[in-house]
Structures are given as C-alpha cells and as structure tokens.
Image (cartoon, rainbow, N blue to C red; front, side, top):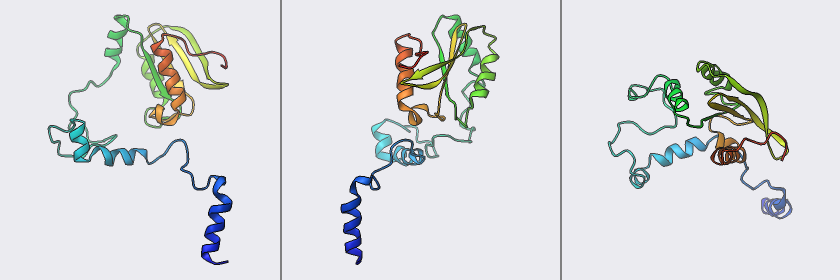
Length: 177
C-alpha cells in the first residue's frame, strides 16, 4: 500500500471515528494560550489594559508579590462586614482544586465562627451529584464535583447552574433533576 492509498483509506474509512476532531472538555494548555493572547500589544490596547506599562508580562498567577502591596492579608474581615450588612454570600470551590483546596477553605471559613444552619448536603446537576453545600448563618459554602481552580473551565454546566441559582436566590437542587 502506497502512502497515498493509506492516507485515502485513513481519511475515507475513519472519518466518522472521531480521531480528527478536537477533544472536548478541559484543555490543560488554555492558560498558555490566554497568556500569550493577553500580552499582545493590540489586545491590551483594545482592552485598555496595561495603560501604566508595567515592566513584566501579564500572567494568570505569579509568585512575585513585590508589586501587590495594597491587598488585605485576609478576606475574612470583608466577609464579616458583608454578613453584618445582610449581603447574601456564597463561597464556592472546585473539589479538585490544587491551588486552594476545599479543606483550606473550610478551615478558613471556620475562623468566622458562624453557626451551621444546614450541614453538608449534596446538590444535583441532572442525575449526578454536582457537589456539596453547607449553609452557615450568613454564608453558604458550595463545592463543585470534579472542578479545579477555575470552576467554569472544568465544569461549565455546574458553574452556570451555581450562578443561576445564586442570582435567583434559590437553593441548589437536593435531588436529581
């Protein structure tokens, strides 16, 4: 079989097998693409970004904290003020987040000293558990099953469901839909 015959066979007989399609789902290189894109001068100009001409490229995450000296050490005082003001708060986290694990968030929220209104309860998306939630007095913490640090990138349906329920001031479904 010549290479041309082989290529013809490969394309003609296997076109419906999906081998040539772009894979669906999470792309681990997405942050690389956006980093390159958002550092392009024409993109920054269109977004009115980097107008101060910072001397380093934009990145998703940086260990260089020398430029960030105006942020609080902890968000807990801000969260306390919001709760005291009656603002509805949902904190969420992907349960496979390696950067800020669920356990760390739980320990941090525990420092608020809030009473538990409803202990850990599963919430559902379609017929599967979408994650778990715990309602405190003044705050709800929600986990999203199978999601990493950037929840909408990993699980867009669950992220949309979470946002829709928050905006509608509805609890997440406690039974399969």
